Image 1: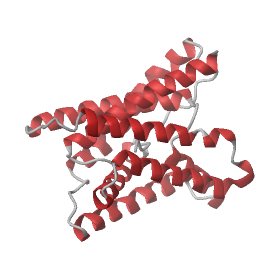
Image 2: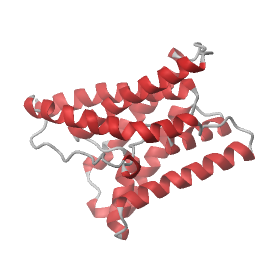
Image 3: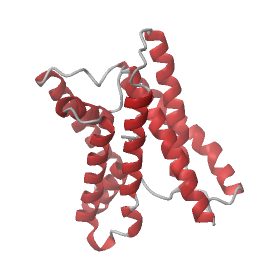
Image 4: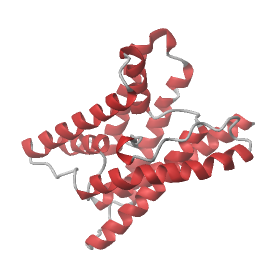
Length: 233
């Protein structure tokens, strides 16, 4: 019963993640590095961004299998239905619900972007605290860190750097709309503190409700530059 509650809550929070991610895409003032790469691929190939997210994230799951082999367990496979569900939510919200809406005011875009980051931080923090399944990119980087003995933060930030470089190359090489803008910087500055804030609030609540047995260690947020944002697409 407890596990069922956790899975149901996870599904709800994944929907909220999809809504937040879709809103950041809709206002079009910049997204995170990995999300920017996904959106650039979407522009380049004419495939829905949620579908591109599914492909990239499932590739990360495949990468985990190649690295972990015998240590690849059923819990890792749970990432696949999660990212498929998330991609479907993003496609529905971004294209069907928000598709016909036009936002002309830059101030409104900025406000909506900050609201979306708050929503995302809350939902992502909840997913991390529940610990039913891990975001594929972070899980891949963790697996690679174990295999190579490199630090997780170094590998994860290297992925961001490569994603940014590829997004820039695609943007200028194929005259695509820019996916890296001021919103990218705003997200880097405020998402980590928001994530840490919500995790500190959610951990004792979930523990009190009996959803988690042991409170997982809170993500370090004293230096936002060192904190890696779990990617949502």
